[in-house]
Structures are given as structure tokens and as C-alpha cells.
Length: 111
Length: 112
Image 1 (cartoon, one colour):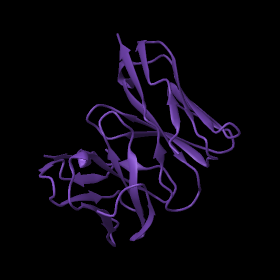
Image 2 (image 1 turned 30 degrees about the vertical axis):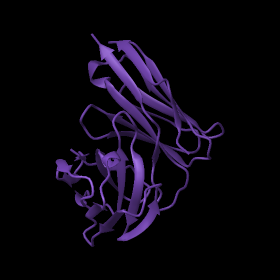
Image 3 (image 1 turned 90 degrees about the vertical axis):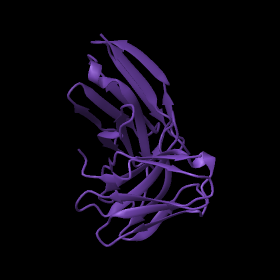
């Protein structure tokens, strides 16, 4: 039990639609990172938020965007969904450079 | 620059030992190890900071060779519960906002 909660756990969307995934970080953690994990691969870094500001981004297009709120919870938004966006989306909360705790993930299927 | 993990897969019987390696081409500040079971979130195992320290937790330990930018995870007297995919996450900088770059993982299967 990491204290990091993601919703929803599973989601099916149609190509071209938009989706919002949510993450409630562990109490006191001011940093949230989002990762995309394809089947059989390691988590790929999407972006990170530190104290409500985007503070690092991986190799993902602008249609992947996010927010972090004053309570440090976070959202990941993906516009114009593509079939390749089907994956497990993980958020991880941490206290700056400390150990990161992952949520259980959201399994997104794009059809 | 994604770290390279080796081997890709390991098959063990209970009680046997295993070593999983993680190499980076970039200078690292720290290495983080995680274990992920099928359908579950990655679970934190340990962090190693530059300085060549070695850490241990029960029968799982790890080392970090700063000069070689390599880390190794040692699993001794393996148990069935050790089965899963092990990922190393590398952190090239010690700054707020640094995300971990994960390797592709090493799948460990322990049988009785």
C-alpha cells in the first residue's frame, strides 16, 4: 500500500477521443511523475510536476498534457487518442529526489 | 539514454541466487530498483546513491559502482515471492524535477 491512488483503473476509449487520468499522491509528496508502460516494457517518462509546475518532460507529443493541483494531486490529459496510446499509465509521487511510490495504474485501451 | 539491464530473463529454483545488472552510458547520481508483479504497480526496493555504497534488505542487496555507472542487484536464497520483473531506474541529476529513466526490465521466475 503506497498511498498513491489512480482513477479509473481501466478505461476503453475510441481513437480520436480525449481522456483524463487522475492521481492522488502520497501525503506530503510535492512531486508527481507520469509514466507510460507498454506491455513487456519498462515505464517511459511522460512528464513531471513539482509544486504545480511542469518540471521535466519526456519524448511525448504536446497532446499529452497535465496539471498538478495545490494538494499535489495530478491529472494526465491525452487528446486525439491513437491506437498506440493503449498502455498502462502510472503515476509516481515522491518528495523531490527521494524514492518514488507508484500507484496501481490506469489501463487504457484505445479501439 | 535508457539504462541497459542484463540478463533479460532468469529462471531459478527456490534457494538459488541471481544477479541482475544495470548499466548506464551517462553519469548517475543514483540508481533505484523496483519489482513489478504481473498486473501490479512497481514496488520500491532500494535507492543507491553515488559513492559506491552497497545496501541490503533481507536477502536482497545491491551495489553501485559510480566509476562504471553500473549497479547490480543480488538476490540470494531466492523465494517464490521474488518472482516478477525487476527494473532499475536511473537518475542522472540531483535536482528537484528529475525523473527516473527505467531499463526494459529483467524477468525473474522462481519455481519450487
